[in-house]
Every structure is written in structure tokens, then in C-alpha cells.
Image (cartoon, rainbow, N blue to C red):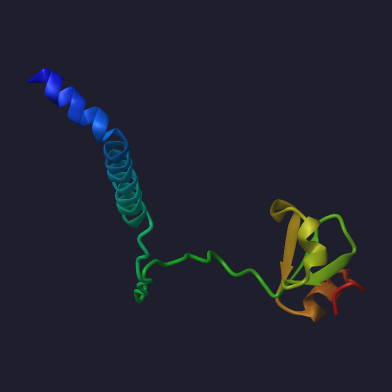
Length: 109
């Protein structure tokens, strides 16, 4: 009986190989597809009103200068970014800055 089974397996060895190979390839492809679909979800963007709040703190003025400098800068001027916050003096208007002895920086107009 075992001898007959060996004979049948030897006779169809090539066919058995291709069937096993096809089953393995399909298993790998299906498993990979399932893994990919589970890790690549695209979630819709949800916009929520008032999702968070930001506290701005005290608004000190529209212009600032260095305590030890001679120029003042508008808040939106990047040239004054080198001044550390603890060394800044704030002004509400250009007139206030100029009356304190500061001149407008030529890099920010």
C-alpha cells in the first residue's frame, strides 16, 4: 500500500510541485494584501469648531526695541528677531518709540 502511494507520487511529482507552489504564492499574495489594507487606512479629515484655544497673553504694543539698542522694529519685522524677549521694550506707536530715543530700523519700513 505504501509502495503504491510512492509510485503515484513519483508519477505525478511535477504536478504536485506546481500545485503546492501555486497554493503558497496565492497564500503570500492574499496575506500581503490583507496586511497592506489594514495598515494603509485613510481617515477623513474632521474639522471641529473651537477644537482648541490659544492664550495670547498680554499684548504690549505694535513696536519693540532692545533695551540697549537704538533702533525699534514693527512686530512683523524679522530683523528684530535676534532680540531676546527679556531684552525687549514695547511701544504702542512710532511716536512713543521715537520719544524714548529710538529710531526706526532701516531694514523694516
